[in-house]
Image (tube, rainbow, N blue to C red; front, side, top):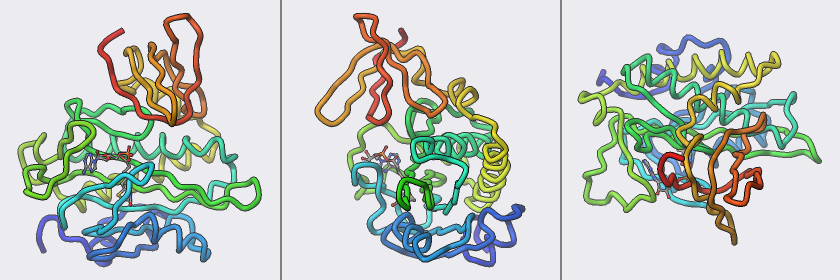
Length: 267
Ligand code: BT5
């Protein structure tokens, strides 16, 4: 079997989890694993359900941006969570947990150092190696499910002819490590860390302190672009819900819940 070949059997054999990924739906190609995971979640899919594809024809980022990944080279997956212990405004805690798990898995399998860029990117050598996309399902005012999508550039090459222009520099684990990396190994490590960290969250532990220490964004002058508004200031930290705290030049501290951040150099 090729180093990185994905199938239901190879995934099940590689996983060491109790419940994360124990139900697995694999597709050689699908439109978007997040779309499929949301459909399954709406239909009652069990917590921990994994939807994973070798290729997405309509992979998405936030605000319907494109997630680009040539067939067979990245990890493209979505997990169904049912975090009944969280209110909707606390859902970013799941993105924190999963991005920390990405950092753990990358370190374990490749030894590479990672940083996190607020709110949903993981960086290697200052370049985007992974993007996360959380989508919420509500019943009334409570969380029914959260679908957490993860796109991780394992062996992706950005030198391909159809590679699009990206908003920020990108990198793959292969390029940074200088060798092909097993997607199965990264997947197994990732889901293991997701399970451990999610259980801690369920037990009441808050991830924001650890997440903040990993945030490349903190201590930097930043420009935050939000719909209809651009804010410039010093990123001083995050709060328990993952909101970015930005001190403007007039000294006022803004709490930013969503937006795109450009780093403007050390503050
Ligand atoms: C994200 O959005 O970074 C979230 C990406 C989530 C993708 C996963 S894949 C599995 C699951 N199913 C889906 O359909 N989606 C999830 P955002 O922060 O909005 O960043 C999107 C931007 O990242 C794009 O506009 C591009 O500029 C850039 N980009 C696209 N593909 C990339 C790649 N492979 N590596 C680095 N950057 C990329």
